[in-house]
Image 1 (cartoon, rainbow, N blue to C red):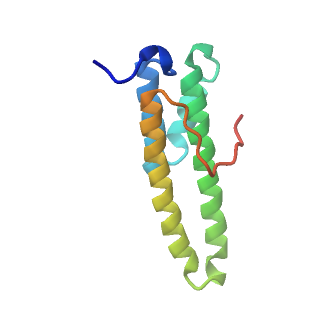
Image 2: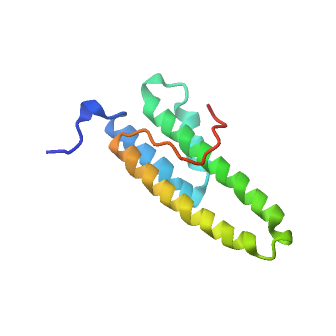
Image 3: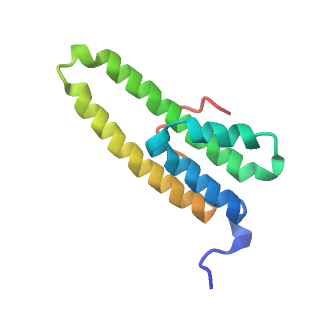
Length: 120
């Protein structure tokens, strides 16, 4: 017997799996997969959970991109400190991607704590 009551979770099994993949893909592929998933499904109201989670993953990866650009611009002025900060940002982002993927796979809408909500 499953621990998850299907009536209390968002999205069907396929949408939850796609949301999991969307979040985890950010570790390696950045914003590409969340953007594709969102663009394919954004006009399908029955895909509400998947749309929400792909937008969330897209916003987080765009936020990370902005952070990395800022760190790159600051690198010549910080004597290598931005390299350490970049590694820390990467480790924290991987943790958040995994937490988001696990939550999405359970049917829970995950919100990244440090994401700019650029795509609404």
